[in-house]
Image (tube, rainbow, N blue to C red; front, side, top):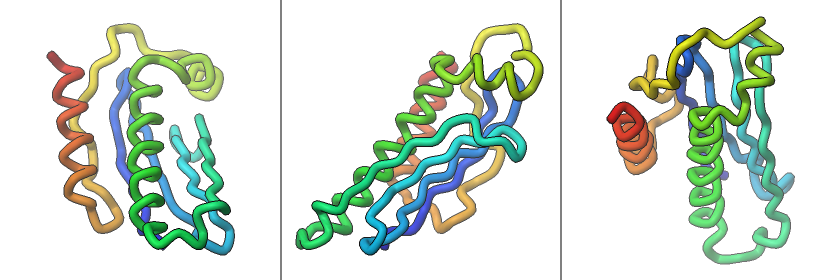
Amino acid sequence: MVGGFNHNFCYQGQTFHLQTEDSGPVRARITSLLYLGGTIIARQNFDYPDWRELPDLTARVEAQMKSQHKQLLRDLHRGAFDDRIAAVSGALPAGPAVAEPPVQEAVAAPEPELEALVRAYLRAGRD
């Protein structure tokens, strides 16, 4: 079982929490959840029962977790969840989407490569 990733991000003046975790090979599911406050804004699941017996299971799961985590972040910053956010919070604040550095470092033990990729992505969004 691969550890999870947890990050807080600012988007449109609000703080969102993005969490990705692996349920382990018995359940064989990777779940990513995007929260605003205590409300789930988006969920993405990936089931991998066919991978259970593969010798590179851990590497595959970790790669999928990183990819899924980054994709939800990209989707957030391109406005894919704006309607859901507006429904939950009442309205999106006016102004352009601005990627800001994480409000809080990873809660779980940070994965250096993912941390670097997330930071690079956020920096690129400010240019």
